[in-house]
Amino acid sequence: MLEKLAAIEKHFEELGRELMEVGDDYQRAADIGRERAEMEAVVLKAREYRQILKQIEESRTMLENEEDEEMRELAEMELAELEPQVEPLENEIKLLLVPKDPRDGKNVIMEIRAGTGGDEAALFAADLYRIYSRYAENMNWKTEIMSQSEIGIGGLKEITLLIKGAGAYSKLKFESGVHRVQRVPSTESQGRIHTSTATVAVLAEVEEVDIQIPSTDIRIDVYKSAGAGGQSVQKNSTAIRITHEPSGLVVSCQDERSQLQNKLRAMAILRARLFEIAEEERRSKIDDARRSQVGTGERSEKIRTYNYPQSRVTDHRINFSSYNLASVMEGGIEDFIEELSTRDEAERLAAVGTGDED
Image (cartoon, rainbow, N blue to C red; front, side):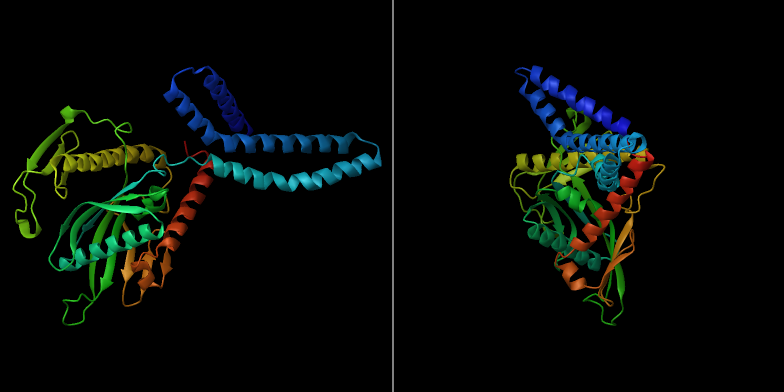
């Protein structure tokens, strides 16, 4: 670990010298300042760690070579004080060395879609939307509907929302996957329990500087927006459909009144999806030898069951359950998010120790 820390310190010092010589290149200065700020905590702990190891070595040398009894006692006292500090400090440094997800500080574009189960699945999709809206409200985040498709009984075929707030992606990134509900639908006259599903995709909102999309790669179609049941509600063609031809991804937006606003929103969703694909490819190269306990984050992965008869919510990735279904359905998902984050952090910390992570 000392060799790794020495390389980090060297780079930190090189950046400091470059910062002094950068001149009027304010963008480069900002980039260097940001990189140094991210490294500073590790560098300070590394220096503290190295100093303690040096003091321990000096005390051990004194203990071996010193004949004066008082000096030997002093060396023993210093060792008794210093040696217990080594392991906790090493753990702190390892935690700081855990690679940060570059998306953690970003806002979230969340897509919720009804899965199997007909109208009941659409109602469950609406329930999930309420869960995340309430959770965002509790976190003092802002939510904004980007597009939605409703059914007549209060359900949602699909909804895309933007969630803005500090740490939004870092908190919500483990919510991607298939959510399953087991309950008696309101339309069920025989009292039978049905199982329905909805999928959640959590994407990081990215800027144009994060991912470039050549104009030659996309096809933009405009059409008249439609309301429930396909009824036309706009005289002008304001709805936008963008097709990314290399990947085949298609994004549509029609909720805004202007064609420009719909285009901007559709491009934001497309950028987020393409960025997610690129990030998944990058992560797969790292994770081939290490399958994460908290799951892959893929939309097809079954992650959580909401069982109404037992008032139970279970996350299958970590075998963690809550028996307070009512609270969860009102946005009380903090325990799940905290447990998933803790497990993921422990896995990545272990990977640092074995050299699996980049």
